[in-house]
Length: 161
Image (cartoon, rainbow, N blue to C red):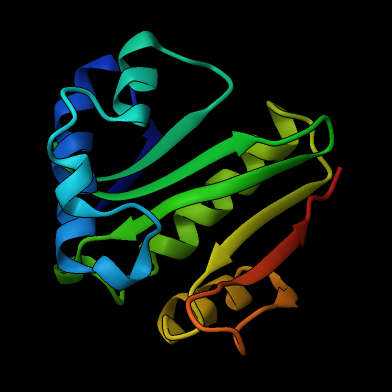
């Protein structure tokens, strides 16, 4: 399967919106945002950033031909760390290492463009496949609040300089 990876550009904003809302609708337990809230926004947060061509907060995409099939956001949190956010691959494309490739691109971006030392992410403890993918990509569990209902596991990756 021929998948291309790149940062989303303003022309991709409508596809981004579609994939993001699909992720929230089909997997409500995997994200902090809720579909019914987000669908009513005229413009989603990252949709606006994509349309503005924001260079700091970036949304990376996986494309099969011209179709956007995966997302991975990278947002700086401080001078030495950034967060992975909105990680998602459409279900019919899973099992093809698309998530791993998106995370590799995110690590490269964090190192070269943001010049940060650490990438962080949060994942719900029930999302075992995502946790396995993150671990395959070199993320390590930093803090687990899984014993408390509704909390997430924090994972971290030390970026090579």
